[in-house]
Image (cartoon, rainbow, N blue to C red; front, side):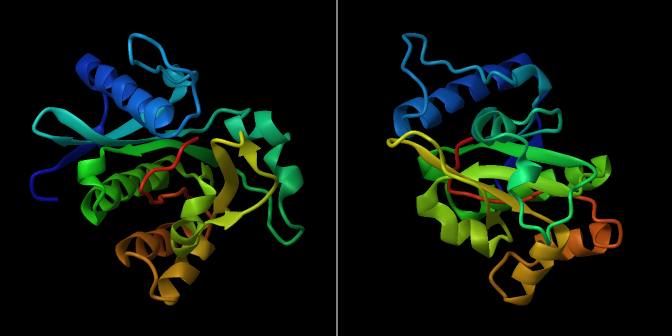
Length: 212
């Protein structure tokens, strides 16, 4: 990650940059929210989110967030997410929801995604998450599948900004690694740290950008 710094956001200036990047991504690029003159979008779960940011010098160029308080945004859109899982998918003990993956266009290479997801993976292991939810753009489903995510339930969002609910487990990450389609470090860490007790999150990572 030469030139990049990845960390959990704690400073007021980082949060202001998060709100600005959130606006550019989910208002101006993905028409998920209405424009406003401040060009600033504060997520409705802001106080419950943990944000991981990728910075160049002091500039935030990428972010992702995780939240583990129910109801999740997916629950609000389709009802309890467990009701939509296949019968062979065990209900998780400690799920989380990954949201607000956003990366500035000039930094959408693998290094930023890898850095965000690696940090998110470590955080998920520390917190004992065993199941990760995410909503992603249908156009990026091949990427999410390669990372170990599986679609479930109906599409949410709007015709202009549709999103597909997805989930991932440690086993799915391990399977993705076995197919050789993933950045090897992430699923390997997941499989070692979580498979026995099924604990972790997504780590995923993703993205070109996905909105949630």
